[in-house]
Every structure is written in structure tokens, then in C-alpha cells.
Length: 304
Image (cartoon, rainbow, N blue to C red):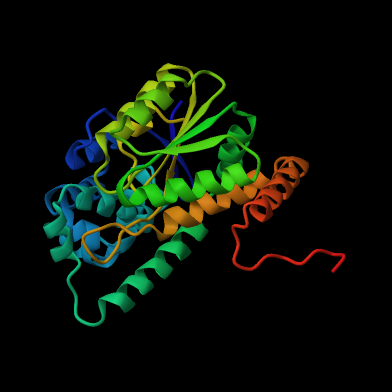
């Protein structure tokens, strides 16, 4: 069963429609909601911007309920509380906007650079509070056990994929980073089988080729993991685990900070799966760095 990471537990994927309204309605319990919780849901549906950026107190006032009801409604929808639900709401709301619209949403007084740093610090704190270490171990152990791993990422997200694959290879594992929409991606996915792993990395508005690659890899029996900021049903249908990270920036592009921190955590865990293998790989790499004279400053030998 495909699962989505959320604070305090897991929830199952919804329908195949990525729409904000359909996604919210699909999360409503089969037994329905109590009248006050239904009023909160109505605000979420009718005022997505206020829901995405407002506080629980503001939402309670709009719905004519108390703040505790907002928290209980979030829990009824499968989240630990309002902050966890709002993170998902905001990611979905922003993904429905164009780049200029996103920039307008984030326009604020003061230094944009300082605002960006503050946002990243807040996002890293949120990631640290919410992530389950067992899921990081699951991904690392899957890569360690796999024959090969393909990391799919494009645009600025490719930097996360490149860092992940570079460090994973250094740790001694066959990990390849490819960009979407390329013949290289099609060729890499065509070689995947039941012994392989695919990791899809995408934020904001997903690349279609990322979704196709994840779906095709799953159909070929490969283990699929996704790193994203909103649990798109298109990805959750293919992924064994969807690792949700806050990726909202303060301009028209998402922040890559939390995504990079997460893959660094996975690679660090990967290096601990078979320490001897990783040590041997690093020693071999060090020898080649010296052989090719890659480094401006090279370590002195113990005999010097």
C-alpha cells in the first residue's frame, strides 16, 4: 500500500485527481464530519488562500468555531494537527499558481534575502520535527540492496539529484542521476527491473516525465520513492513511500534547502549500512583523486 509521511503517522493516498478540492473531499471520513468540522472544511474549500497562509485562529473565526475544532478537523482529515495540514494545503495551493502569481503571493516588505534565510530555517526546523528516521533507513536500505538506483530530477531540482547520486556513488553504490524529458531518462528506465530502485524528486508543479518515470519503474517491479512537497496522487500511486518536505520559498521558485538536507540524511544513513564497503569505496576514490591530481590541496602522506 502506498503511504504518505505526515507528522504523527501515515495516511493512504487519495484519488487520481490532483485538484485541491477533490483532494480535500477525498480525505473526508466515510462517516462524514460533524457540523462544526464541516464548517471548517467549507472554509478550506472556499478560501484556499486564507487556508494556506492564515493561522488556526483565523480559520476558526471564519468558520465560526473555536481553534480546537480546527485542530480536530485536521486530525479527522488524517493529519496530526493544523500545521501539518496547512503545509500540504499551501503546497497544493501554490502548485496551482503560475510563477508570477507565486512571486506576488510572496511579496513582502524588508530584505528578500533575509526573508529567504528565515523561511529556510523554519522549514528545516519543521522537517526535523516531523520526519521519521525509520523511513530514511528504508530508503537507504533499499538503495543498498538494489542492483542500481536511478534518481530522476530536473530543472533546479536536478542539483538535489546530482548531490545524492554523487555522494551515494562515493559511498560505494551504483546510483545514477538523470534529468527528465531526455532520451537518457527513457533509456535508464527501460533497464530497470525488480532488483532496482527509482527515486523521483520534484516540487511545486511536477514534471510530467517524472510521474511517467515513477509509474513505469513501478510497473517493471522496481522500488519507487518520491521526494516532494505535496503528496500528488499521481506520484503516490507509484511510490512505496512519499517523503514530504516543506519547499516553499519567498520568490517564484521553491526552496531546495530541505530537499538537499533530506537526501544528505539518506546518504549518511546509506554510508552506515555497510561501513566496510563505504570505506573501501572512499579509499579507492581518494587514490584516483590523487592519480588525476584533482584537488588543489592534497593530503600529505603519513611518511612525510
